[in-house]
Image (tube, rainbow, N blue to C red; front, side, top):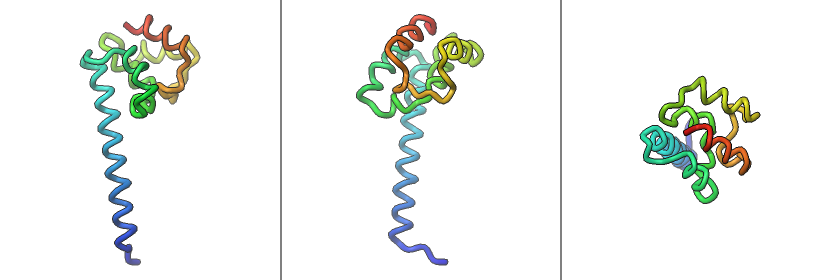
Length: 103
């Protein structure tokens, strides 16, 4: 079955957008890991930057310097936040708690 030029072009556009999103997400996570972006800054940017709000909270928490995977997941569990919670879905009180605990 032949693929039309329109379908091929649309597929290429979708793949390009997905690649850009993946790179942007990785940029946010690596910024936190490097210490150039704080957890509080990620929460602030999430209201205006869709990419910051789209990142899974567990990925950001794990990448905070000095916080490992186990501690990050335990803190999220204590606050009642699941692994699939996105940064934009976190309430203001939970954000404050996370910033205090994950320093």
